[in-house]
Image (cartoon, rainbow, N blue to C red; front, side, top):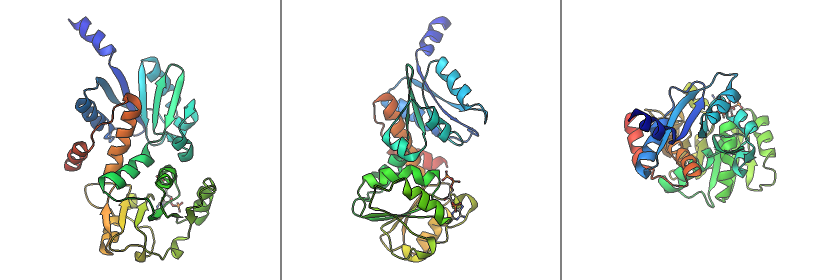
Length: 280
Ligand code: ATR
């Protein structure tokens, strides 16, 4: 009986989220819910890789039959370098958050940007098409969402960062995109339809030093961070009349997109989102 069980277990497709640290990750919980809902037989674990041991950890995971990985801090750039094939959005992001293993092929994708766009367009019900969008930040988080945002055809996407030179460098990578503009923090004065905070300021309970005039009564102020309480950016935006939303929906939607890449089945996300929100 136990032999039958272990044979059956060995056949279950194995996935994991790899990072350092990893104990806090909500991905196993999200993917277990997706699997139950779509009746997909799979196992999804947390994988703590040593800071200098990403490659060895991935190789050992593959040797043991692993089919795919979500990749989180600090390994997204190493995963990008490791992938044998990259999706267009991963190439634009310069980082990989999803790996899919098939024989010797390692497909690298980045589902963060599509996760953000889906959360804004479908879950919040706010179109990006023809809107003016302000993106704050010029690190990996900002870079990951630029192409998916531009794919929605906004009227313009303005990039602003505390260190202006970094925003210029980042925009340079998308120099074939006429809708993408760069602006200094101090010079952003217009009211935008959508303002996205992709800076790490919320981690320090800080607000990027932008004019409150960027927020109007119909502005969606979106923080890619999330937590039990609204972030400092969300409180600031709300004070100045904006509609606010945190990044929990982006987390669930990027996971759904990874699940779809691996399994070819699209999970329903609203119940999973509601359950996660309740347990924050
Ligand atoms: P990530 O990969 O999460 O984007 P990162 O590459 O370290 O992390 O980038 C952090 C981003 O948050 C940068 O755009 C940073 O601005 P600088 O380029 O000027 O450093 C931004 N950031 C961090 N703290 C901030 C703060 N208190 N106010 C405004 N921007 C901040």
